[in-house]
Amino acid sequence: MIASSHTPLLYIETYGCQMNVNDSEVVASVMREHGYATCSAAENADLALINTCSIRENAELRVWRRLAELRALKRKNPRLMLGVIGCMAERLKEKLLEQEQAVDLVVGPDAYRELPNLVSMARAGQKGVNVELSREETYAEIAPVRYESNGVSAFVSIMRGCNNACSYCVVPYTRGAERSRSEQSILREVQALIDSGYKEVTLLGQNVNSYRMYADDGKTVACSFAQLLEKVALLSPEMRVRFSTSHPKDMSDEALHVIAQYRNICKSIHLPAQSGSARMLKLMNRKYTREEYLERIAAIRSILPTCSISTDLIAGFCTETEDDHRQTLSLMREAAYDFAFMFMYSERPNTKAARRYADDVPEEVKARRLSEIIALQGELSLKSKQQYVGKPVEVLAEGFSKKSQELLFGRTSQNMVAVFPRGSRSAGDYLTVVPTRCTPATLIAE
Ligand code: 5AD
Ligand code: SF4
Image (cartoon, rainbow, N blue to C red; front, side, top):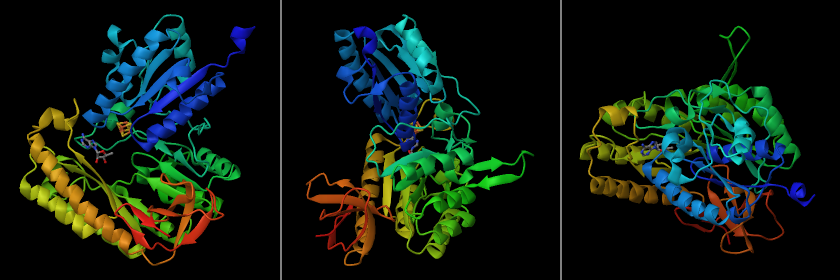
């Protein structure tokens, strides 16, 4: 029968963080078990899913625009099932289920195992909806299908959810409470990646430093983040290990010493500060002071002298003054960040900040402060790259550079992108290059 010989095709489009990228791979795995293959154009798909992000209003606006395009596609091809999954599904279920959105499925981050059932319901003419959050779900034994992978580096989720209550942040509401995935299942997944030739793994979680497995008594810590990191690093010296994201309040010296001890644990730490002002940090409920944050930076510099440090910064949070803003600029200089993600504050409905504080910094002031932060980071990033010019650095090649098939790009342990002539090398090779010049974003070897 022709009808039954057709393999149904799944198209997934992913917005937001690395965690979402890995979740899409879990979704591809769940649907593959159910007979679906992935495809790279929505036009060919039987099922199109958008894995969404709610972190800032802009992220949501992009998805609404894209959804309008996919609806137009669905009008031409009524067999196409259209689903919204991830953080926006969790936050905006009602709005997504309104008739005019024409969405067939709305599935939150903890309900992906249910997708096949929900798709069947949708095929039968009902809406497929599940936005329940879970205290246990970690998708531990689901092997992610890395359908867009370069075959060199992979994400592995080690925990889900978040127990920090940063007042600006929507994540605890969209992704629920923090839970860690069993170390055995993490180690099995990394081993499988090693066996299939991967060379780099990034351990993911909203707050990886609070990773914890308990012994049977439920009290004794059987595996901390530092211990997990060590076990992963020991699997193969050829496998680089990265991790993200670290909350400054949980970044322990124990973890820093493990990073120091293993050559294959990359010397690069993402330590979001958000602001340099003690008053802002308190309003943000970050649970550290400026001094405590700088003490962590000092610990990194002393235990890991070659480590790069990156950060996230928010400009124009509620009641931020020019003086608070200057504190952020001065923190940036003191920390001498190698890299930063920088954002304007975007009020998210129902967060503590939205309920309690006025979003009172005018948009143009937010924009001006952000541009000052970006300009300063440009200088710092350039200085950071310049220290590597003329010195040999080890890179792991990841693929062709955007500019030319004669050039490869890769990353140093410090997570700096390097571009170099291909020679006889290919993706997945380790090699040493000597950068001859740099931009704020890239080391260039000629
Ligand atoms: N507005 C702007 N930026 C935000 N972030 C999180 N919530 C918001 C918000 N409401 C930023 C933080 C976080 C990063 C992932 O996104 O800097 O570390
Ligand atoms: Fe990731 Fe947060 Fe965006 Fe959800 S809201 S996709 S957790 S960045």
